[in-house]
Image (cartoon, rainbow, N blue to C red):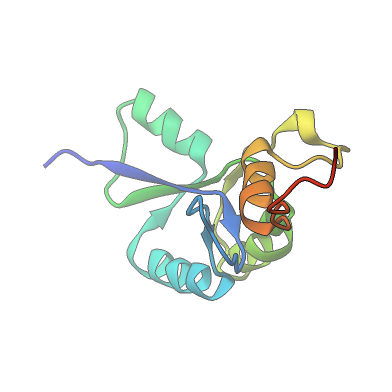
Length: 126
């Protein structure tokens, strides 16, 4: 059987309530996943996985971990757990958002539709 690899892509490691976009995994569940991965899989850096595939030297049970967007919880929650289990991961950070105080558009939509005060029933303008 030909070796195959997996890439697990994460966005958020945080307790999100609600998580309307299904982007999050709680820190507790993330740690459980890392425990399983470290015992059953060969977790390698994403660039190594790419190199192995291109060189046709992929070994069995390889998996890479990646994080998209660059949420702060990746640094505060995921990084310490990855270090605890000595597992590599690749972080893709949206560089256009560095130093900005604005949220991603999907987070703005969530705020508008789920967390804003309802509009009044009748207009007070005449």
